[in-house]
Length: 509
Image 1 (cartoon, rainbow, N blue to C red):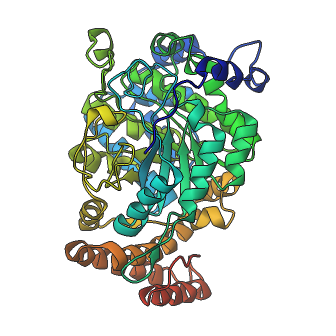
Image 2 (image 1 turned 30 degrees about the vertical axis):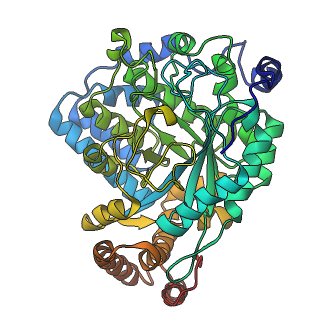
């Protein structure tokens, strides 16, 4: 672990980062695509709908078509608990139509917590002198990956970085290459990270091309809040993050740089959740309209305590904190509004909340999560130190525990990354998701990767529960052959399954 030389001229670096010409060209008459007044007008003009109107909108979601802002605002106004229950059930039905009966898992991998920004809700903020600032060397990063891929069994990570000259585009690109380079022997085969997603600061097009060239998965940047005035208050104007449009248009730059998959999100609790949900929809529509491809995933974390955060205890902001009941509504509404997208529920939430919300449309979650720099190789995933991490976790279950819990509910955990290596990305995967075809590939590859993980990493209890799930999934595939799956595809899958059982790895459809 090393500390960065603070003599680096952060001010001169900051002045070079933002390139106005890279976002101004996308604005209309100097304005971005988030119109605060229009969003509130949409919300305020909506009225509580009849059951018939709700069902018309739900039918559109089930047809995997993006809702309009007016339609989403109408669903927000539902008050009848029975109608909400119908909406929850439809959200799960939509998810299954697009993604089948599976949950994808990943691990966050924090590489550096140096940051020039001063966001009032974040433990990484520059004025937090209690935060222990560290950045992983490539050797230290390899040790983290060896634990994730060789002991826990993850196949995906999302690499996380603060915004600082020490974690610029070159550093991020080097970490991606390093993560991919690690291969570790397991019980019956070998383990490696097959998809590196990135949660990092907004970069310019040239730097984003560097990430594309080394094989970045999804590029994830949250706007945090779409409300302009709240954004201004929480992100000081003398920082890079204080520039709202530079952040808002980063996904446009990513597509321009050749990155196929981008992810958006909101930190709920900073402003009124109804506004933020509409903001996410407007963002998705903007990307669909301009590029023909919406967000690959959407995230919806809630604000949690962070080291020396002045925001969490302020009464003025507590009014925006999201209750558990409203949180479930948020997840449901996003699934219905943007039916093709992946939805990520993280270990910020408690086990109880995650177990509930996973079944109103979520597709991805993390486990064995450590968010301290170098925390995985320290091998104490249950311990948390607020001065070494960005925020506090609510669920510290191991990956084995989570998979066992899901298996007992009949859900298969997928470690599939094949689509990204077969060209099923960007507009290709969007078309397949919307048509319902991608889930068939997902089902087959979930079976294959689940077999890998059960043999290499599962405890006896989890393996026993997992065997029941995998039998059920194989039986479903067999029953759908040759109507859904061709005989050749079924035979190939079963041949791969046998080879994986014998120790081969990374076979995919």
